[in-house]
Amino acid sequence: MPVIEAHGLTKVFRIADKQPGLRGSLRHLTRPRHREHVAVAGIDLSIDAGEAVAYVGPNGAGKSTTVKLLTGILHPSAGRVEVCGISPHRDRRANARNIGVLFGQRTQLWWDLQVRDSLALLRDIHRIPQARYEARLEEFDALLGIGELLPVVARQLSLGQRMRADLAAALLHSPPVVFLDEPTIGLDIIARQAVRDFLRAQRQNGTTLLLTTHDIGDIEQVCQRLVIIDDGRVIYDGSIEAVRQLVARERTLHLLLGADWRGELVGELPGTRLVQGESARQVAVTFDHATYGAGEIVSAVASRVPVVDLRIDEPSIEDVVRRAYAGELDLPASATPA
Ligand SMILES: Nc1ncnc2c1ncn2[C@@H]1O[C@H](COP(=O)(O)OP(=O)(O)O)[C@@H](O)[C@H]1O
Ligand SMILES: [Mg+2]
Image (cartoon, rainbow, N blue to C red; front, side, top):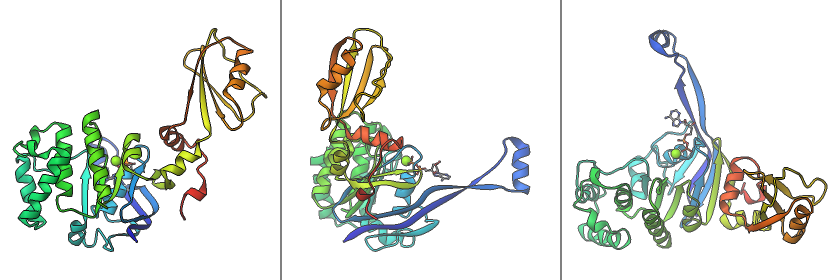
C-alpha cells in the first residue's frame, strides 16, 4: 500500500529575466520578461509504508524541490501527488499530522528559545498528550542524547547538536512518513553516525523515510531503495542491491609502474578500460573478473613497462552513483519500475 504517490509531478519556476542595473530594473518594470525553468520534470514515484528511500542526484537536480512538493510547501505545476491519501499542498493541516520534515540546511527550531521551549511549542501545536510527549523525549534522549540539549538556546547549538534537536522536533508527533533533505550535511563523523543510527531505528519502527543526501554511507546504512534523479527526471529507481549487482563483476586494478608509460592495450584484452593516472607511473585498468584474471592484465602491462606495485578495488556504490551522474552507466530499464 503506497503512502507516497506521485504521477507526472512537475515544477516549473518562473524566473524574472532582468538586465543588471537601474536601466534593467526600469525596463523590467515596464516590460517584464520571464523565462521558465523546469526543476522537476514529470516524476513518478510510489513508495510503500516502511520503505526507506535515498533520493540522490547532483546539485540542482531537483531533490529539494521534490521534497517541497511532497511536503506541500510548493504547489506542483502539473501532475499529482498524495501522501497518506492526502494532497499535501491542498490540505496542509491534515498533511502536517502525517509527516515530519527536516531541512538540514535550515533549522526549524525557534532561534532564540531553549530547545525545551521549542519542543513544548510543537507539543502544543500537535496537541500531543503530556504523557506521550514525555515518553517521546525519553526515547529521543536514549537515541539522540537530547536531554543535555534541552536547556540550550538554539542559536548556541553546534551543527551536530542542532541536527539532533531538529530531528527530535521533526519527529516529535510520531509521524508515519518523514522527509529529510540532507540530514547529515556538514556533520562530523560522530554526529553523522548518530543521525544514521537514529534514522535506522525509526525505520525499524515502521516509519517511512525519504532522504536526500550526498553521502554514500547514509544511503547504504539507512536505505534499501535508491532513486537517482538528474535534471528533474528519475534515471534510476531500484534496490541498492540491484545497483550493487550492476557492477558486481567489475574490478579495477591499480598499477604503479617502474617507468613513465602513456601507452594503450590496443586490441588486447577487449572490454577492459584503461585510465591513465595523475602521474605517468600510474594506470588503472577496469575489467570484468568473470572474463579476465588479474594476472592476465598485469602480464599485458608488464610486457610493456615494469610493474612495481598493484592493488585491486571492488566497485563501490559511490562509483555507480558518480558514473550515473556522468551518464557513463547503462542503467537497465528493468531496474526502473514503470
Ligand atoms: N524558488 C526557486 N526559484 C527559481 N528556481 C529555483 C527555485 N528553487 C530551485 N530552483 C532551481 O531549480 C533547480 C533544482 O533545485 P533544487 O531542487 O534545489 O536542487 P537540488 O536540491 O537537487 O540541489 C535548480 O536549477 C535551482 O536553481
Ligand atoms: Mg537541495
